[in-house]
Length: 246
Image (cartoon, rainbow, N blue to C red):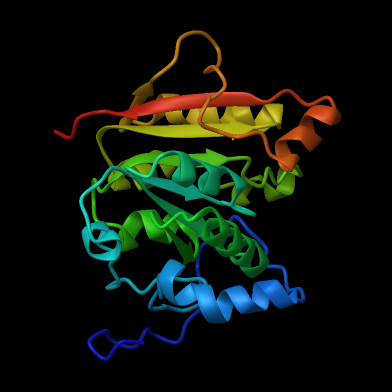
C-alpha cells in the first residue's frame, strides 16, 4: 500500500460481488507472464478490504498510464482477453483497459497482447464496480463493454448479477457524455433484465432501434460465444448512450 494512502479498516465487503474467485494452478507461460509482463501491462491497484478491492483513494489516470490522450475503452470481465486484445491490436489509436479477477485469464491476456504487440492495453485485477465507481476518473471512458457476464441463473443468486438496479449510475459515472455502454449475453432472462434496468436508468438512453441492438461488429467471435450458440442459446446485444450531465 503506498505510504500516502491510509490503511483500510479491517472489515469485510458488505455487498455481494458478481464473481466467485477460482483458484487454480497456472502454466509456466502464465507464471512467466506475471513475472515478465505484469510490470508493463498490469496496473498495481492499492487495496481496500479484500484482495480484489480498490482503495477508496486510489486513482488510475489514463493520460498518466498510457502516456497520451486517446479514447479509452474499458472491458468488464475480459476473461481470456480475446475480445480486448483483438480490439487493441486493430485500433492502435485507442486505449483499452481490461478488468478481470481471474489471474489465469489476465496472464493469458498479457501473453496474447505481448505476442500481438499491443502496447495500448492495460489490465486491472479488481472488482469491476469499484473500478468504475472510484478508480477511474469521472467521464474518463469513451466506451464500457460488458460481454457475457456471469448470469447467476439460479433465482436465489440473481442478486449477484453485475447489471442490476443502480448499475447505470456506476457505469454512467465512468463514461463521458455521449459515451457508449455495450452489453451482450446468451441468457435470455439476463438480457431482459439488462434492458429493463438500463431503460429505467436516467444516465442512459437507447442507442438502438427495435428490441435488441445489432451484433457489435467490434466483438470478435470467441469460444465462449460459440459455445452458447452451439447450445442453441441466442446472443442478444444491447447498446446505451450516456446522456449529457446536467
